[in-house]
Image 1 (cartoon, one colour):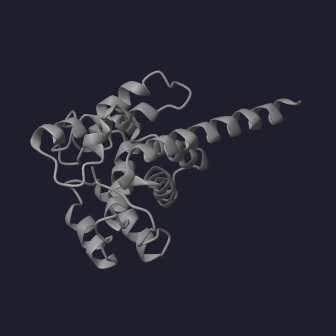
Image 2: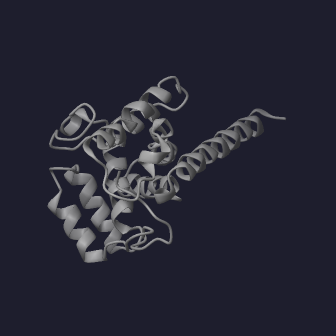
Length: 209
């Protein structure tokens, strides 16, 4: 076996392993079936629209696959609660990015994977969680995942409600440019929507938690 074939084999193993982990994450949360795979796909499209290299597009795809891995550390009763969460339960849910960052901190072969999990709920204006990072303090890949994650939460049908319509999603993204979202990345998502490169509806459910 030559070196290139060996490298391709290793890459296939990593690809299949990370996709399997993403399926495990989504299987734990009944409201987010397929969410990790979709967010990874949207993140890659955003990276392409932002003129990032093919290597970076592939990197953000794998990082985004693992963005919700911290939900493994959240009790099923909270994660799958059908009604509104109480303040204590909300606090538990809000810890999943920190848990994810800790789970992935020793995954050194894919730079940024821990940051993607740890910081994807930070907000551009500094009011997010868990660390309250602001603007460019938030790693760029995490800012991309934030937009992709929020898009899927708005667009996907859930077991108890339909996804939002196209214009409502666009307005939500526009209204949160510079507050929740990096303006450059939000603008790229709007362009993808206008070009029909991200689906406006999905068959599976997602939850913004």
